[in-house]
Length: 94
Image (cartoon, rainbow, N blue to C red):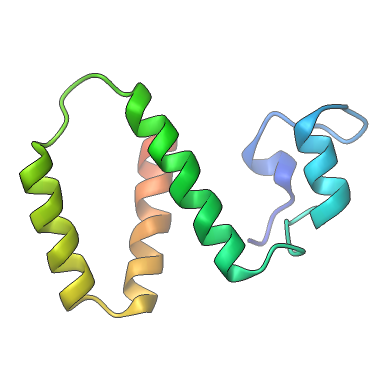
């Protein structure tokens, strides 16, 4: 992460709340979280958001097959890049 938390969220320095607490504890770029913690949070937040989504989802069998192919065929660095691409796509998709 090259930008501070406020670049990605509605947090502004001086605000209070969870994002302010996270920045205080883990740093402006969440650099205090280790890689495993970041991946775990990505998984948990993704699961929560996917439960909220209600339109045009792949069938669960299709997703499972795709996940197996990703796990079996992509290097870790490519999987991390895919995560970044997917997050960016979700963030800016209407």
